[in-house]
Length: 76
Image (cartoon, rainbow, N blue to C red; front, side, top):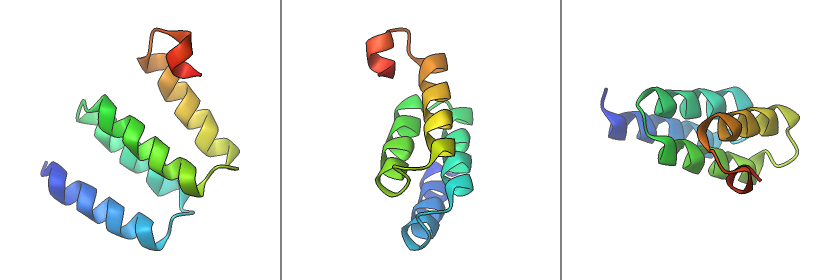
């Protein structure tokens, strides 16, 4: 998979439609499947700018953090 092209497509779409929660999640899931956890965090952090009040967003972000990080301080 061409990571640059994938990121470009998601970034372009989400720039136009930042409230499409499902696509932020798909973007993060795709980055995770490629083994790029740092990029997953970047995706969730960027999504937080538009979805700060989305319960679904926070549930998924926190679920990822609990699974990925060992230190509870990192999760918080």
